Image 1 (spheres, rainbow, N blue to C red):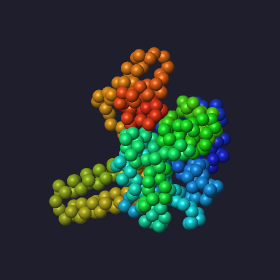
Image 2: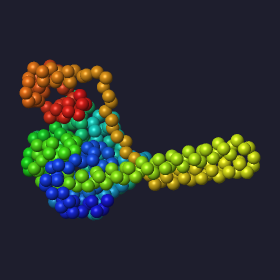
Image 3: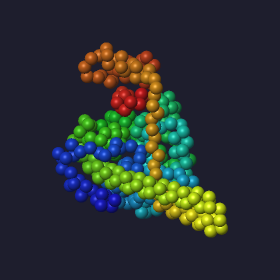
Image 4: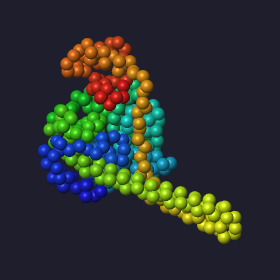
Length: 342
């Protein structure tokens, strides 16, 4: 993996023409691929420079453990070389809900339990808040800041939540590096050419690095699947031996059964030690059996307004009719429509 973290080599690996035609092997989301991306030097530098600030760059930090006491995990925590500097934890989350915030509080407290320092927490929110009411009741956003703020003085130094809505006014070419990173993660496009801002140099570099990292992670997943299959075959073989010897019902067979069981336990424990921490849970959107009122309204709007879809008028008209309550802007409504998550 270290070879992929030499950013100059990554950028030279693909020329501009290749960049516009390449396809990421998976979409950016809250999984092992995106978490591996957060561990690269270039992305670390973007986040530290933005979150910590003060002219401090990524080289002043190293990638710390992601698991704290009680098996609580962050996607990445950057630890400072200078112990007097701020810690920075980053979490990629599909949707911000009340249940997520309850879990979120535990992450910095676990970091504090080990370091005695409350971290700055950055949440990269892919699919927005659970509802407009939930957002307005619990989060604030200043006009000059590209993130929502959650009050956290007792359990985190700061909590900043970035999503497509919070950065919407800053989407341009060129754009700040942190905005380009959030845009990459929230838009979830395999092809950079699918984004209007494909000429942005930071976005191009992120896609180059992501292509290398995601390909490597996908290959690792294939290898892991083969190892799991081999493990299952070995365990099944042990149980077959136990069943066979149990039918013989003699002293030698009983000793063999005990030995097979001991070997099986040892094998399982070794496999667990090798693989622990590698599995990632993926948040899957439930299949809807009926169309939502939001979706039905959009379909009717499209029928009545032929030609290129006008999302802003559609959004405004829907709001007037009491719809789209969980969307803060037309851009997240558009995103949800194309992802079939309405």
